[in-house]
Image (cartoon, rainbow, N blue to C red; front, side):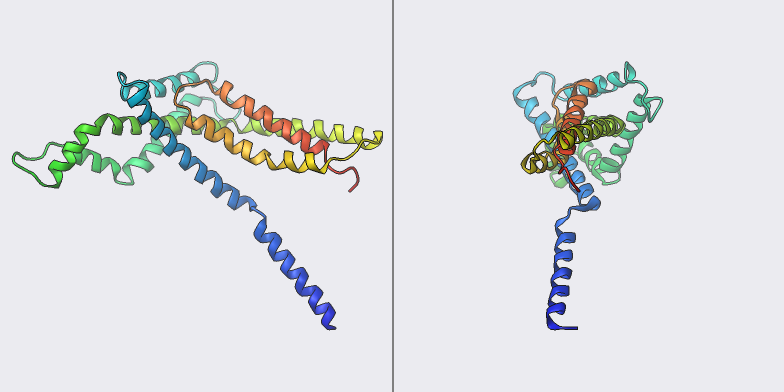
Length: 249
């Protein structure tokens, strides 16, 4: 084997390694989604706390509790059954209970809150007394954080049930785009790599944005109004991507 062949083989190996490293992959996309979901949870709690100070100071933690009741109410009405489950409200409650179990009970946060809420012995001026004093000041914010965590879990359950809507939008967009591509191919239309690459680039961010937007809303909104517009936009981007794909393979 000549030196030139060795160099070409080495160059091809390095190019393959770069392609593997640069491609996000399913695992990396899943980790990114989990990362954004965590940020959405933190953002929703912070927004609720800000609202308790600025926008609904009279309601306090009752605002978040009302949101939880409203979210479950949507699932008990017109959205009480889907293609995946027959009782969406029960499914969401189980989801919320699981989120509370893992985020509050198993992490030890619930025990810490209960310890701080318990009154210290008379004359105690140690750490327990300091923690109890802080709890009395921020008790409403702690309750709001617990409620918002459950609201977040209910909405997350709704998003898992909304996956068929996104899949249907992707399917319809793909079929519509391929038909438009064939019409352009046989009609002598021009290709647009710029349109193809930019439409393809925004599909995943828009999908993740739908999750973050809905999960972070500081007020109750019917899932149909929060999810269907994003599903339609994802389908539109898929249609544009498929229709602007190169004419000849």
